[in-house]
Image (cartoon, rainbow over all chains, first blue to last red; front, side):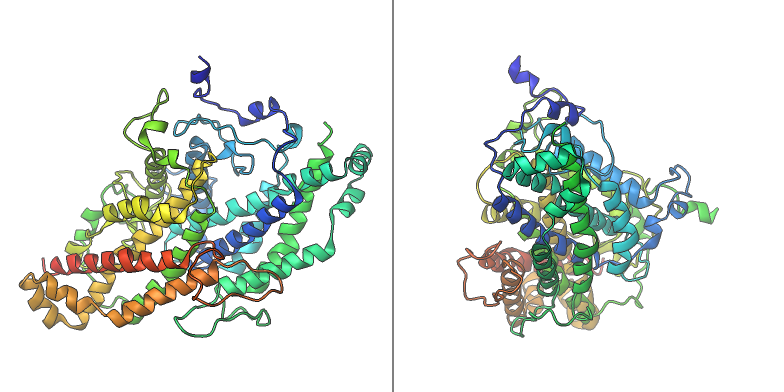
Length: 283
Length: 283
């Protein structure tokens, strides 16, 4: 009976989570967290470079244009419909069993493609739900995408929006990883954090979580990654390594856009996640 | 009526293609073809680096393991089910209207997410069908994947196989682009090619299509891309640019594996596509 039970369809991950106790022996440390975040930078830069291959393809984001045909739902752009359906497949495949992955839309589908898997639970169950996916969605489509993609329409909407989904997924994973950052920092100084959380002192928490020197290192590093990964490479030509050329003309994605992404959105949103998570850390 | 007709569900792209005449004014040239193939190298290297982030996760590829639960189909691995369902969504979204994209599984789904789009038809309709997706599928899972991923199982199957799909899609697009390469070469020397095609002389065609010097440049370039894109970058540390270190220990994907991928599979399979396409170029 027990063996069968783990194959039963689970339609609500949250219910499962609340029943699981945070394991203090989990392999979460400031080092592993930093390593994860640093590696995510590469994935973010790759995904931006890939999106920049395609034209803006504006009709894919316009509910009026693509909602006009017979049998088509209104009030949702092609991009939204595509991402909803792609996420539904990934949900069926168990992607969102991992707490690192949070869908942009809610799904209540059984895991028909794979059995449930007992992922390590490193987060505090009552604070797991914290995420800023709505802000990421809005930032990506309204602010970042126009900086990435050249104007134009070649009809290649499925491939284009598939590359949007890749960007959204890694940005969501990276930014909402703030929950893990906050958990590690909380464990490292429970006394200080507990008093600030009990006082609901957002400003003091934000200050405690902020290290401008560290943030500056990250911003300069991602800008450098954009120059290195976005350069044109020949078999024997020189390799462009500088970050002084910020015109963006020689790179697949303007390095200053990647700097801006981290400066204005990734880092502030991550800290927002950290503060919200901490405010629920004693619930 | 005409305006409505383009919104009618199209269930068979092949039927549509046969009705379309190749446009001689299409922007296909040796330069645009080479530029496309060179840009695809970056996407291929990125996708391999991303797959190498995850463990091998062998159960995802084993039909016995994941097919054993109740309500689960047998005779198909998790990877196959996931890729089938993901491709079906992309097919609904019109991805395979573009001749550059060929699914690994056949779909007969209407384009419910987007209206049909009139992509440029640069290929000869009777030879469009040529592809080596079966060989790519087999090569990827049996030969390449064990060289990319570290042994281990962390249950992160959906994310892992999603990264397999990204590799498969770009390898398929790159290798089956041999149809475009062959079309350009045919147009550039119709007389020579026509006589070899009429004689069904595969060996002579293969010889005519082969430039070892050019292939060597490509192989060295992709190896170099693996060293540049797969290095660890710090904010102010030196950037590793050499291709001499082939141990692979400092890179996210062993550069010699990328060299081998092109040497043993990408280039030979592309030429196989070119020859098959040409053999149907006068049908």
